[in-house]
Length: 211
Length: 211
Image (cartoon, rainbow over all chains, first blue to last red; front, side):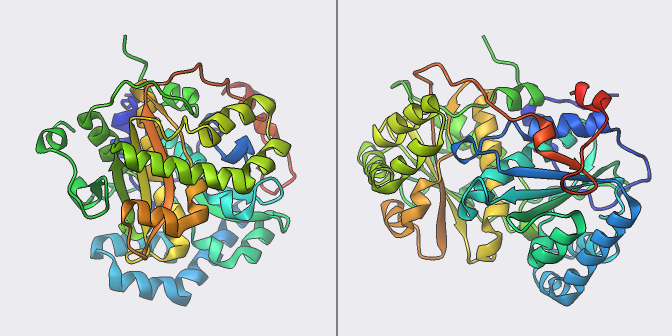
């Protein structure tokens, strides 16, 4: 059974997957996801994205340990106070319990400040990251955007051999999902969208109902 | 004739559109794009994205003037030296010539540091921005990711009334494209992807050929 690959359907079902089965994902599938990632726009078309595909168990475990350390050192406490309890448990098992780094493939994403100003890296790399996540979703695979390792850039760099000019931006596990994904919870558009000036309502109810 | 909305087809044909016709875009279409944008992931599901839909001609002209000023003050020179000549001409007409801000709709995107740490705003907002751009592409509309106004945040804030905690992240014109879009130019995956460690090749040729 193939999932619906219509763009709006795919975007609508994207969820963070933080627990994976042992089932592998072929390099041909990873190549398709990376090809799709690199269709994204970047500042001056500099394409500053750099990807390291990690399958080695020792490297994945080391990335998992780094994630756990950062999580225990402060992230856990911070998130427990703020996030929805179900989301917190899911994140805690993923980051603290090592479930996330146990995915068969971790794609480590860097941004090269040698070709694009440091201040432009995020705007040039996260659209590619989102293409990668949507591609995984389109193919029925689990994936998750994690940026926690950016908090200890030098250690993350060392784990995959990034030189100093490449900034660790994200780690994306890819695999088959082991748990039912959490339902989406999103604020209504009315809370996020304004017309002409911030604070002003947008738009007519007719338009909002048409979505 | 409706364009192919398969995710991989949409991601493959996304291009920056920097010149628009006068043809309008309905609020119902904009609502659909914004709904799709807000399906994207965000740090701790904080959804720090804020959108202002600008149709007012005076506001669009003011945003166009700000963009032109920033471009003339340094961006133009910088980009002329580095970018491909066809891309430079396109960007120069879009930013310097005001063609970009002449789109019927400008979506001003902000990130709210009141709900998400400033350092996490880009990772939480650009995936939503990419959903918006892909949605426009899926519907056959032109769009473009511009971040140049972030260089003069206070002036950009004033134009749409963002309070100090909301950081201007991007301005996205939406409309119907007036010129043939530039062909994609992307480096081969081999130049961007490594296996296990940066600098190591990835993967077998079989996998690369399968994309």
